[in-house]
Structure formats: structure tokens, C-alpha cells
Length: 194
Image (cartoon, rainbow, N blue to C red; front, side):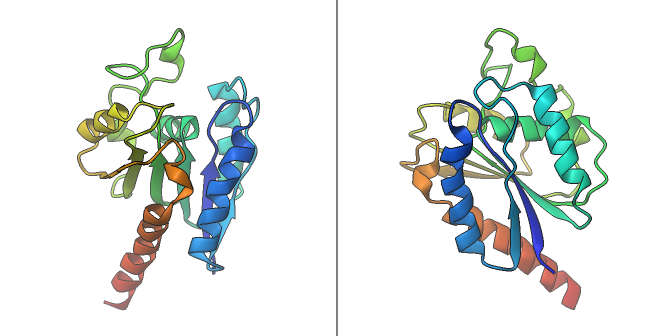
């Protein structure tokens, strides 16, 4: 049985097309035992959390088995908000967030940021025991690299990967992400054989 992956794109003009390179990289690196879903999110140039939330909900409802969730940039922060606020029936095998901006606190505080800010107690509302990974390039010119430390402070159990020299797309190299995804499979397989 294939491991299902749901990849949520970033926001902005042309983001879906740009992030396709990341999706292709992952599919090639992970191989045929993984099935990557990559839905186009509504109004990518002017993202609205409520519209994206509805699409994420629809995608998750169509997956019966455990799913690995990946979000890039705005898609990562929206995905984390969704997971921490909504009742999710689907088992989440892992959460992988790439260059995710942090809203509120010492992060971004643009007009209306409160609509996408995580609740204060969001950590307690995440699925218990679900592995969470964050990746952020220190040369990201879109989402500040400092946002990685804000997530690390809130989620000490998360795996934090600072990518030296990485830009907003991690220079198109998601080898760390692919290796971490494969490590989930290895961990699960090891537990099953005990």
C-alpha cells in the first residue's frame, strides 16, 4: 500500500507552478511507494485562510489511510493552523513544514494577521505523538529565517532543520525532507517487527 502525502503550496502569484518543482523533487526522491497529492489552492495570489481550510478539509476527507502532511511557506502556516484548530479524523503520520512564516508574536504582524495567527495553546491541540519537522533556509528572502526559531521555542519536540545557504525553496533541494519522510517509514517498520 502506498503512503499518502498531501502537499499544500505556498501563496502568491504563480506559487502553484513554482512549488511544482518541489513536489516533483519529492516524488522522484521518494519513489513509487509514496503517492503525492498536490491540489491547487484557491486564490493563490490573494490567499484566504477560510477558502484554503475548506480545500484542506476536502482533501483530508478523501484520504482513508494515514497521511503525511507537507506545507510550503504560507501553506505550511495555514496547515499548522488547520491541524491545531480542526477535528481531524485522518491519522497524521508526520507533519513537514518548509519555510513557514510565523504569524503574530515576534513574527509577522501585517494588517489582519490575527485571522491566521495560531491560537496561544496551539501546541496542546496538535495530534499527540505526531512527528513534526521544520525546514528553513538561512538565505530566505521571503519568510524570515528568524521565524524558524519562533517555532522551535513553541515546539521543543519538533525536529528543526536550518538549511545553510537555502533560499525560500531550499534551492530546490528537498533531500533532507525526503530522508526524514523515509525515516518515518523505517521507524514504523521497526515497530511492527518487534
